[in-house]
Length: 72
Image 1 (cartoon, one colour):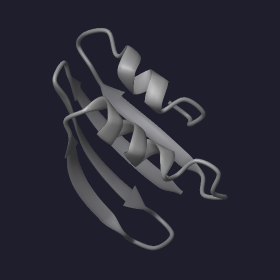
Image 2 (cartoon, rainbow, N blue to C red):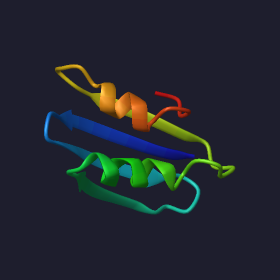
Image 3 (cartoon, rainbow, N blue to C red):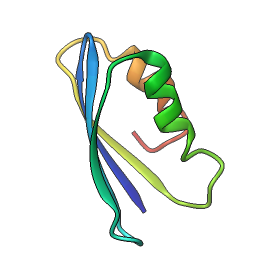
């Protein structure tokens, strides 16, 4: 399972992730919508189960849009 934690800010997303099967983990700052879409799209269509948790104080339409299809 891939677990992604996202701290959403109006101008960027700070994310941390861990793949519980491989042990891979990392952090990234996604500054542009395209960068966020690329990050989330790389996991779509794989047999890997993905869970996204997020913290946001304002409307998080962008995060929900690019993470569509994952358990949010």
